[in-house]
Image (tube, rainbow, N blue to C red; front, side, top):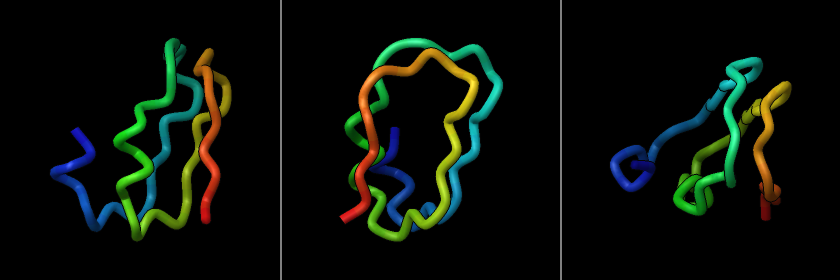
Length: 49
C-alpha cells in the first residue's frame, strides 16, 4: 500500500479502533513528517531516523 505513496508527508488515523501491527511499508515513506495513530490497538512502533 505505502509503495504507491512515496511522497506521503502526513498520516492521521487516530480514533479509528484499528488493531494489528503497524505496516512495515510505512517505513518506506521517506518524506513522512507527521503521524498519529493514537486511540487504536496497534502493535509495534515507528521510529524516525
